Image (cartoon, rainbow, N blue to C red; front, side):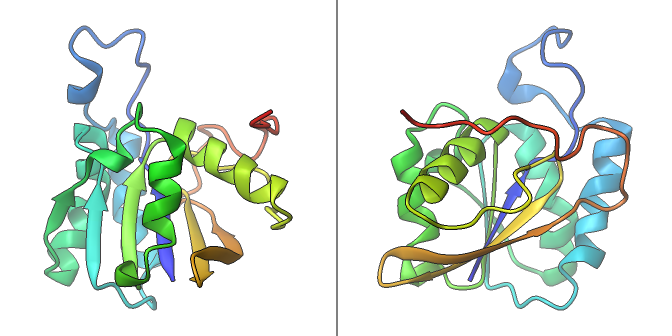
Length: 166
């Protein structure tokens, strides 16, 4: 089982004056990051991996501190990494019970690829701070279920359009 988290709310990237990788979480994003403590309370976690982007690191920081599991920075979770690298991560048997924190662009492409392969993805959404619990066997994702972000803020929900890789 792998827990794929979209980073929490980090404000408008077009209004951020610096490098996008340095954009921090907003106040509501910090609340969503702390919401992961409750959301993942009953889930075993052996590793925590994040995109090098500051907002991804900050999203899993409370979880890392609470569980005493260090955050590993992984380029395969970067916003511009090829989606195949994310698929390789989520299907890696060595990452059992691992948290992976990345970006909506990647998660959307991965969801499209999984849906095109016949895996039901319901609801079709990945709002900021949300988690997809993915089961993988023999290099294939065999199950997926959605955990909404906590607290449930009005930051966008499950209204994102379906994206296809074709």
